[in-house]
Image (tube, rainbow, N blue to C red; front, side, top):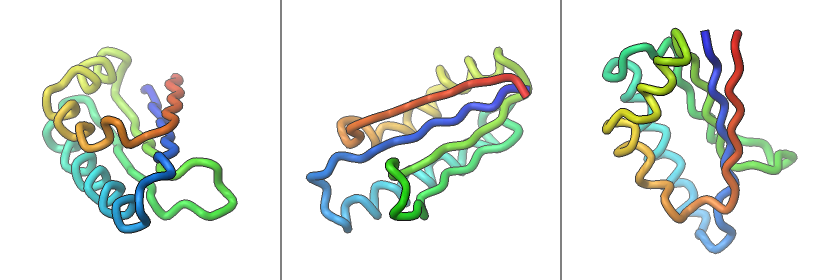
Length: 99
């Protein structure tokens, strides 16, 4: 099994309302992928980040295999789900590892 963790720092020029709307849209988009994309075991988007954190949003997902992760990353529904983040993130960090 593979765990895929991604963190984003959003651009500072977004208003609080824009930030909240963007995070909620992304969370909804990603939560809908579970039943659609084969090989997803778990997918969770965390947007209620404490002020002590240096990132704004976190994705934690698990996949049956590395092939399943690759299929997810290239799946058209995944690409659609992440369109809302294009140009909105200042930083994106990702870690994938075997469980």
